[in-house]
Amino acid sequence: MSGGCWALDLDGVVWLAGRPIAGAPQAIARLRRAGHRVVFVTNNSSPTVADHVATLGAAGIEADPDDVLTSAQAAAELLSPGERVHVLGGPGVVEALEARGCVVARDDDVDAVVVGINKDFTYATLGAAATAVRAGARFIGTNDDPTYPTPSGLLPGAGTIVAAVATASGATPTFAGKPYAPMAALARRRVGDVAVMVGDRPTTDGLMAREMGACFALVLSGVTGAAAAAALDPPADIVADDLAAAVTAWAAA
Image (tube, rainbow, N blue to C red; front, side, top):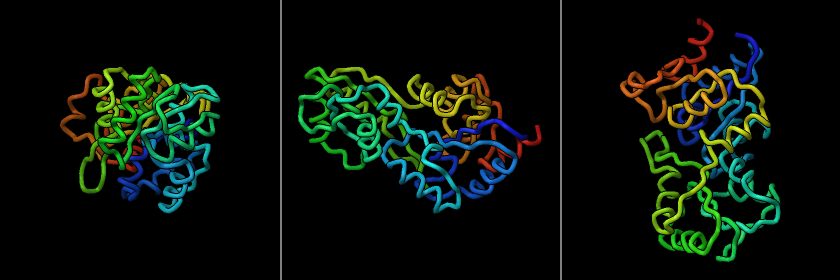
């Protein structure tokens, strides 16, 4: 079981809306004791990296900022320093863009529009983003996840907001997060080879695993149920109830 990097999704794998999933902190500690590097690869673009690190720490999971890779960071990689960007997203998107050297602007005279999950989404914010896209700005979506798992069930994900802007503007977005090329490129540069990708969504985490040449461990603690997991073609390499069970299955293989 020793050696190799494990890339873990956060929502649905490590926690649900920040609440740790039972056994996840212990599973991560087990991986690290066995010599694995553990990184966190999330499509949730809203929190800042410091927010992610703090939430991990509150769950008893130590992490450095370099251990966290987000779809916001992948989106920022699609832009050049100095470009003006309209953001319909959370603080994590603004942080990533500013770290890239972009200028976050609130008017229509922008080079790009970046859209991610945004809990303050309104008709007005939709209109502003769509207007900027129609004016010629590049249209970038952090990710296309249709749903977001929480302890009380599924909520709309960033993909629903991106779809609204696409409908209102008539434009097709470029996606940055899992499983698309910008996130894979970010992971290769920051992490290198990945041995195992653990996630709860085959269309993002599963395809990302294939892109990275990694084993895909599908956990049933997020958006995918047992029946859907059993019907996958090709199947996941590991199907487990949660992260702790996935680590146990890997160790036993």
